[in-house]
Image (cartoon, rainbow, N blue to C red; front, top):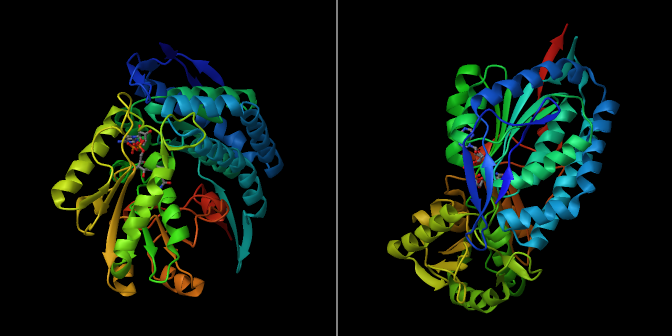
Length: 470
Ligand code: NAD
């Protein structure tokens, strides 16, 4: 079994004081494959000390120096692309084509940070005052397992662009991915203590980071439940927080939609990253008069969405990350049936012919009411709910009637109509007639999908605090 032993503090790989070991399983087989030694809160104290002592020099660096650090990190990560892709596919089970695309996102986050930093007005005049946006101090970065490299690279890039130092606590489930990324970061040769990385349990080490008085800010991506806990735990130290949380995004097909394009797109955005994606469009809102047509179209298109081994280039849906995620999806499928939704495709259990691993059947419920828990709660697996609406006003109301507000999608042959509908949606991002990403535009959610924004100017601002000179 592979052992992940080390954490990274003050420029060195080091054995943690914590001795607990967590076993990780191959998502395709269920076989135990990795043991990760977890850090403890004593390790966190060392990481904090290193980040605190590295901060004054880091805060004094000019933009050229920060750009040099960011480019060094990018080059070191780029040099090991194939290994980083491979470890992600093996450890997490993400289908390889999607993992490659997300790797590019991770890599580009360094150059985007340089661009944003170059355009940012760090110092400006306001009336008689000079306003200086200065780095916050030590930043705590806490990430989930579903796109580990992307989240770590993007958050660290922005912390460095701001002149802050960082402590990163990745998900316990991405230990091998983190270890390899760390080797790249180490190769970049940044000053000791600028970034420190500790594996550890969220409820122990993550929570201790959130409460720590010498950590100024937490940048978190993960579930809304943990996001709320972070707000509570951070209150005593008035922690600055950026929270990128869950979603239950609506995909509205307007009455005049061209289903030939819209249905394959709907499956693609619902089942992206095997359905383990915060921005998945998991509520498909369709005009009631076209419901039967949509159902037929979905049944025709679904077999083209391949489920299988993540190394197969044709596969779009791989296994769930672990046993508990597999069980969570199964439980929601049972719940959907118990709530009275009609199962159009898929269902409980593994796909036909699969006898091991955390593979689930891509599942489509129709005749779903927006009040059912399968329509309100984030499932984080390949489960799509079709909800019929009687008027466009009702579609907008349903789309906005959600605890979440991360993302939305609108399709219509009349683009202006789609834009008018988009303008009435409470979501951090709305894609019209397609699915696009703009890494320089702010990303984040309304309501329980988060607090604050990442990416672009807004993404840098949240690592800074204004100081006024008069
Ligand atoms: P999670 O919330 O369980 O864990 C995320 C991280 O938080 C892990 O590193 C974990 O160890 C840590 N953690 C757990 N408890 C903690 C605590 N009390 N204090 C501090 N840290 C703690 O999420 P997950 O299961 O790893 O990831 C899936 C979730 O992430 C989904 O809800 C998904 O929607 C969300 N997500 C959001 C975005 C976005 O950009 N909005 C992107 C990807 C994933």
